[in-house]
Image (cartoon, rainbow, N blue to C red; front, top):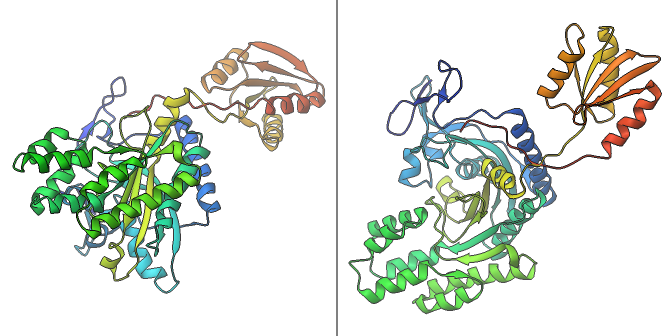
Amino acid sequence: MMLTNGSGKRMMLRNDSGKNPHIRIPQGLRDILPTEASHRRMIENIIREVFTGWGYGEVIPPTFEYFDYISRGLGEDKKKGLVRLFDKNGELLALRSELTAPIARMTAMRFKSMGFPLRLFYFANVFSDESPRLSHQRERTQAGVELIGSDSPHADAEVIALVIEALLQVGLKDFKIGIGQIDFISKVLRLSGISESDQKEMKRALVRKDMVAIKNGLKELGSSRAESILETITLRGDAEVIVRASRYARDEASSSALARLSDIHKTLVRSGYRSHIFLDLGIVRDFDYYSSVVFEGYSPRIGYPFCGGGRYDYLLGMFGVDAPSTGFAIEVERLHDALSREDGEREVKRPKVLVASAQDNFLDIMSVASWLRRKGIVAQHFLGEFSLEEAKTYARRMAMDFLLIIISMEEEMDLIDLKKDLIQRVAPEEMERLMEDQLKTVSVRYRGEGNDT
């Protein structure tokens, strides 16, 4: 297969400072090292439990599909960023850049006769070749849900409540979900006399939060209309946003769009989520398929949204199924970043022990290590000829908590606390009590691991 981006450019290779200059990876990709990988798996497992607990079923779409299907509902910028492939028959394919369109295709193929609403979730890597920037990676991991086949505002409230619960369960404390209404903004722009092409440019500027471009785009309008639009797209806050925005609802459809937003907000407030939500009519997601309420998640520790979603009532229609839907995606790397910056270094920590034998008896090492693992302790084997200093050096390099040296399986062992540099000689029968005490001191912290970006 041949791999290109949307413009046919080849991928650039990058060199990591301080690393072997002859070994490189493509720009925008990164290696995930053991500590971060462990933290991310922990995050994913917690989120998976939350999604399952809310009655959502996991699906795994293909990594690549026909370009025509995977590009449906994407804007032109997103289409240009798709990583394209040609199979041996010359068919144009593309790696998935998000999961909503693939799941829409899957629903039309696999679930059309099952009845709605349908609740699905996923964990998957996604790929894009947009212009590299600080917050952009060519390969990312997303966790998300799709609630398919309901046009009720309660469905929108459900998925927003679900993302809040998932974030709370993984331990994120300081975050907000901003909720907007793209349908209302589209109607305000159209009724103000802005051309369709200028509306698209305005929405692109809103995605970028580029107020300079927005103001420039409004110069041709009269000052009163320009001021009305600027006030509308900068409305942020609580329920008063609905009241203030209603002044610009100049037809029934606009009023209906605001009423839906109000219903969702009231439901979330009454459900106890007031402290984690706010209304923001300036939110415009960078996908063409969004048709109504949209939302994004923010942490003050990072400068870009770590999750987002909204209602897409017409995407399934592109696959021949009339099924209004809503959903969201969490960017796992960004969530991990927010967690790491919020509370410093944390990780779920199990005691880690390097097992060595003073007699170089590997069968003893295997036996003791297996016993430790059954107790929930991480155990590694020391390989090679025994040397106390070499064993201690290796154990510290591997971030072990203890070095256990088997003197005799029947008589005694040395347990070295590597953090305190203390040695305790214990009989084999005492080892179980000591290890159980260690299991009671499980600590929780997140820690970065000097990963390449």
